[in-house]
Image 1 (cartoon, rainbow, N blue to C red):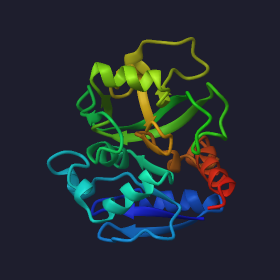
Image 2: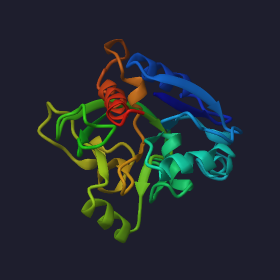
Image 3: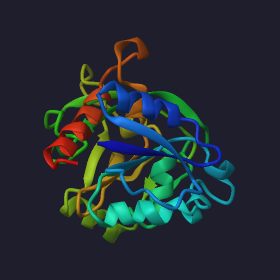
Length: 235
């Protein structure tokens, strides 16, 4: 079970992703963006960072990288594909996920812990969580405001494609959305999946929350879920 962690010029969370994957016992290998063959890999992760310096728009240039043809092949063949932060932006730019990530409403790069509610646990990325479980996961982005037109939002909700939503801390009685929603994402969306359920994008960083020493281990089940899913299909 080997997972490709794609490195674009400007990726900076690639080693974190490799660490998290290896921590749960998955084989992980860094793959440079010029690679044209991902044969032998059973999943791919597009990590956070600033691919190509985020020139033009975040993720806009990375979609033209040679390796993206192979990422598309894996996605279309049903293999798990994950985009985290900048990787989420790349997946929307590449058309593998709907919508776009716009500048945060506060117009600042925001780096802090946030809380997410798990909306689905029937996916290869979330079967280790409980329905409605609230996670503490860090974010670090300036363009993380999820946006889609009304029809797309309605389709996402109808098809249960919203996987993670920003939420108040579990100890609080609730609160205004602009307090717990760190970037102004529509419908508090923090992560979505494609209709087939095998391509997921999320702005928060589960790979930075895989052990208590980092402030939270709530991201670890994300990677154990992926491992169990790959084992289940004999990848």
